[in-house]
Length: 400
Image 1 (cartoon, rainbow, N blue to C red):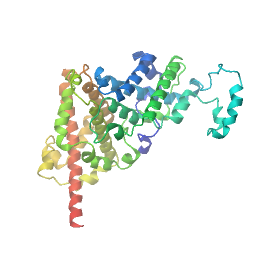
Image 2 (image 1 turned 30 degrees about the vertical axis):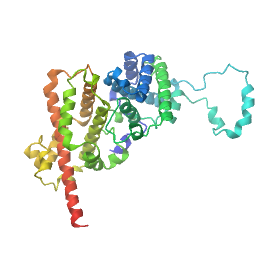
Image 3 (image 1 turned 120 degrees about the horizontal axis):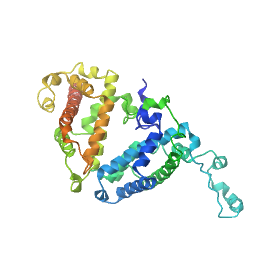
Image 4 (image 1 turned 60 degrees about the vertical axis):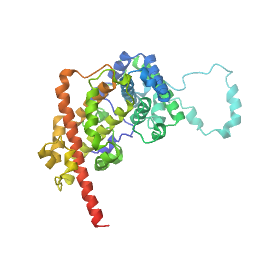
């Protein structure tokens, strides 16, 4: 399979199940049953206000922001399908007649300024352009899931960046304002389409986008470069993403948040959990890609168990897994399929961000097992790639 088509920066759907792709009405019905159109738009503007107003997020449950953004991504993906397969359902951009002035009066006056314009007159009069086509042709490439999650981390006061968070995300006020106005219009248009009813919306049981379903094993957060060379991300993971020396205490704390109520009423920086979630998904998808490409064997074929600090950090791995870290990785994906891990981490993120909705205690045993498997994956990855880097460093030192 050509996995480059799953690049996270390409304009395609990224968050729908196979069933939802086959019947886009299901998503619209769920979202507009959960919220009115006005509530949907109000949540959008609350998110925008929270980005700029310090500690505004404390007036809300952090999980509500995440769930809203997740729903908004699913909503956008659904309308992308509608625009592709039933474009006639969308309203024309030119359906509002201007009755405020005498016909032709301003048209004649505006001819004075033709040299200043940079728009094609034929494009201006294009009656086929719709609200959906205008959004997806001009805005969707620049507004993807990555952008929305950046805004979410800003709103929830993420603190992991080394410099100013607005500079870190390269956020420009005019771009953010444009994105939010366009999304508000899209919500209104989506509601109009939803009101047509299920019988009008397309049924897509055999469309090619089913290959993009979220309930299949495929990368969702990897760039084209990471898909082509997943070992680059996996090899640098503990250098640029997460600190291996704090990974055990960090995940233990995350697990505790699944059960602790009202935590965020006093604590700070819930946005850091969004980053943790994305980092873990990227590592899981990168290691999975290496398994698919049979790349891991290249790294583990010459692997030799090390003593000292490197192995001491792999304390959750058995002696057998420390001697052969590939076993821990194989057992990780035998425990759950890759897309099932994504679903589980999504649930953990909701529980840990919420002040009220928590993991059911009766599931604690299964949760402990899953966290142990996740720790083993992280430890095994560090064993494989840290040993590889040590070997490369020795070669570099002997051959300056």
